[in-house]
Image 1: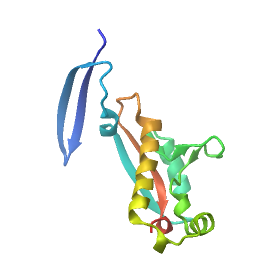
Image 2 (image 1 turned 180 degrees about the vertical axis):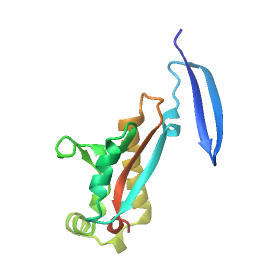
Image 3 (image 1 turned 120 degrees about the vertical axis):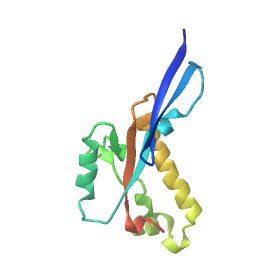
Length: 140
């Protein structure tokens, strides 16, 4: 009928295990996509080749470095935390890094990861990796 049968293979500390979830009703709300969606940060500095690295990662199957952006020549926006660069932070919020709450920054970083997971990992059980580049000067 309308049931979903799922087998999930995980690897942790070089130990593999297969977990089987059987007979889930089709309308079951579950967040398996989070288990299937690895997160990464490309922690970098300006003029280091990070744009090329993100473009190279995006060319690989099941990897996304940044969010889709049809206005960008590359088709993605790889810097999800650019609002925390010193220039934009000072001009748009009239703040410096010393005034940024760590909790607020972490919430924004988590929001960026959630957006990438929703864009790339929903409605699929294929393992994927999603992330974005983060410049050193975007961390308070």
